[in-house]
Length: 381
Image (cartoon, rainbow, N blue to C red):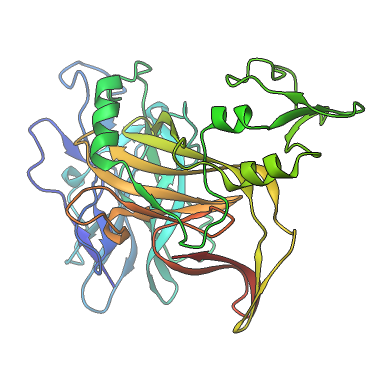
């Protein structure tokens, strides 16, 4: 089940764009944006916001819950849906539609509710790269069409390129001090992280196609090839003829390890993503899980130089942690703050790193890539 909320206490001059929805088994923690025109009193035949022409009833429940889609004027887009407890069509003053050049396309993300053919989803901008300008409104989309083909709401578009809402460097340091996650490695982990300079200084070699032997790498990596494309001509590997150095490199050196931080805007720059990268010199062999049987695999999954990352997402409105992304090799997923574990007495989330593979997870346990009967296992403590 889920709960629907109508925003109240909207400041004077601002207007509702849609209602908010979330599952009822989570703490109330979401948001939905309100909007106002920069020059509301200006005599403009195409103002930024306009009332809808009327509404279309999308669906109603037996318990008296009605879902209304605003029908925008020509040249405008609806960016949310409203919910009422009456069969009478809502007043057009309830919401505003947005001029289409101030909107971006959006898509569904997670299904929040399903009742027969009726479904409710959260929404996100379709384009979500660093410089993408689609702003998540916090509203929801609903339809009686299972394939979601008729996506008839949009998100907002940020036209300000200055990144004024982003934290400065001092604020980034403060956020990391306050929310920086703690990584727990498996108690039987063999292949621990190190810093990149330690990896270079302790025997990693630069190899070139067609040439025997490898070249030592400066601790700063200044003699590594740069520019161009990855055409396979160069690669970094362990020393082939020095078993002691190879084994030492594989084990890593946790005392030297560092987290490498990449800060970037997200979802129209209303959030800040703090991406934390960790480097392990070696990724160990995978584990095959067959029913109740666990079979260590000799070499499958092994590789030199294992970069893994996790991301914590901060609201630029209030500085609060909202979500974390846990990377798992070529995949991963976002986890809401309500489902995170925290170091006792702190605001620091816990990251569990899988044995040998270093994939990150929000909780301890056995995680499978594949079916429950046959898959590659990632075990955390």
